[in-house]
Length: 146
Image 1: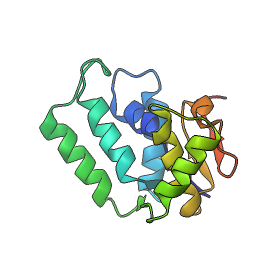
Image 2: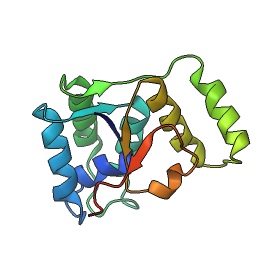
Image 3: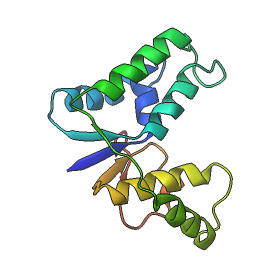
């Protein structure tokens, strides 16, 4: 099963003050050990960098140097597949945005869903299941819910 981790899963894993840090970190560790098939997009990595370096978003932000090192390490990790959009992704994203009346930051989750679909992702792990309500072609799961 191919799993795309939404930004919030990565943020919890690397935010030591998060109540979900241990659970999220366990998911990442399983991926690095090859026990689960996890993939990553550049969009998620950029969002991770933005959140982890923002003192308004995390209690103890990373320095730019720490965040850069983490993001490069994740991007270069051979056990985590990198998936990228093709040239048709923007067209599909904007068609879905119009069909579902998406606006503001909702476009970013829509983009992830289309990239996931295009790259045969089976499931997206996210804490924000409701943000993906427009998604009918990829399963959405909150890994923190029991």
